[in-house]
Length: 433
Image (tube, rainbow, N blue to C red; front, side):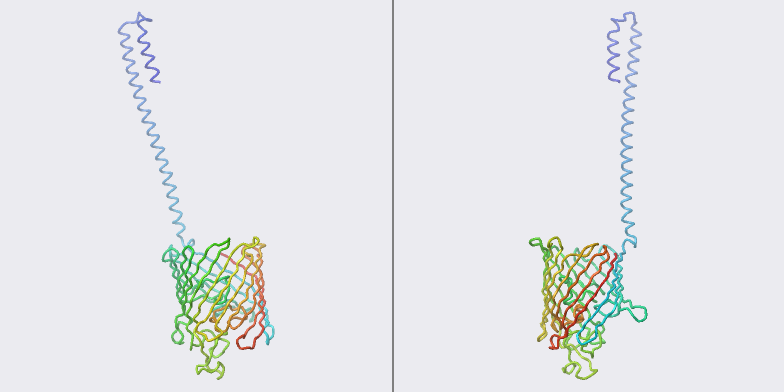
């Protein structure tokens, strides 16, 4: 407006003498003074307007800064809330009901109902330290948490199943101590060497980086020196993973040293040959175990085990499929020193309506591996057996499956007195997390 008004007044002043000749010089001078005052006032108003706009801009910036500060404060508060104990502690567990029928040659058919319940608590003490604690049904069996129903409804046993600390020393490298889940890779999740319920006691290391992994464990089968067999058992495995022709391949090698020669069993009655779980045992004088009734037996061999394993996972007609193989040899045994398994798994029963089918064949010679820690279901557990395993599972819902397993096997193979051992297990299992 100032730009329009000043030219207009100027033009008026220039033409006024011509148009209005009667106007005096004094009046014109007065008009010029008024024009000068109006111009000054307009400049002041323009300056005030510019200042007002600057103040408004600064206010908008200040408001935006406040909003940003509030948002940042909210984002800072969220992690603080996540540091509460309830966010750092997690629970998981499962419950299984099982009907079982065992047909062992030379004995009456055995039927029983069993349950298994487990609950685990994990706490993240910091970004790199986890502490865990777990309880499970059952007794002191190192490879089973099943509890047989009976006794007129008597209370059932619950035992310590896990108690450990896991320290992530660096990215991918974990050091674990206490009683923990087995860190060793099991091809096909089968139990040629290690039962799925075995929780080692001692220390372990896990390392995974890109295409390879290393697992190691140092465990005490007996840590009390008063029993005379407290030597440390240890082992390590190296494995690699990769993709080829649409399949994920995993393979590896391992070595384990389990010193048992001349020691009594760490679980069971040392005078009973069967409590060496298929491994060769003799009396202290070298005579066959049981020659002198009631005299303790001892292991004849150490278990210096070399393992080779492989697994391939791929899609077959839209079904997730796994094929696996595992081989072990005990270099300390004179004979009956080899064990192996070959199997497959088709499908998965993780959600409602899904099916999963499994099969494997296993052959475990008497001293191929430590019988105490092998699959406790296959052929009644232990070594010196061979046979087939079939399993089918169906998903009732995301956390509920039903299934059946059937074993067709032989025991006491090395003695030449083979006995058939067939076993049916029907399960309903629920998991929660």
